[in-house]
Image (cartoon, rainbow, N blue to C red):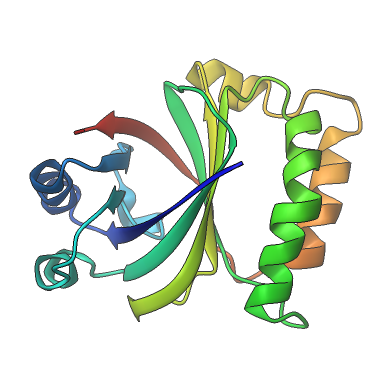
Length: 184
């Protein structure tokens, strides 16, 4: 499993996040639905920088120091992007350990059509919503994401039961359907 440290910028202004990511040659994930008002944010940028000032101006939802764990290397045309808050009976560290050590192998088994999978584990919330992580579940097509997200008859049940062990499913926001853009 590869691990690297980055900054993540979650914002409601798609264009501002896109411009910032382009300037820093990072990665951009954008939910392009017409009405982003019901989403937790419209864009997530992942960049490397030592100057947080320009990031703070764009990160109206949150700015995070993250560790990216690449669970399944690959490429994807579309992502299910899942912001996560830890389970109320667990610490961030306990939740993160379960996500990494227990959930990741289950995800690989029960999301067989997933072409790429990364966990963006929040090391520190610099400002904004205190998310604990962002799951990036990549698929080759929107149809695969929507129609083949679960690969076995019991997959939905297994995955949902496990998520309830480490995440606060009532407070964690809905998923984004994100198109990736690489500015590297």
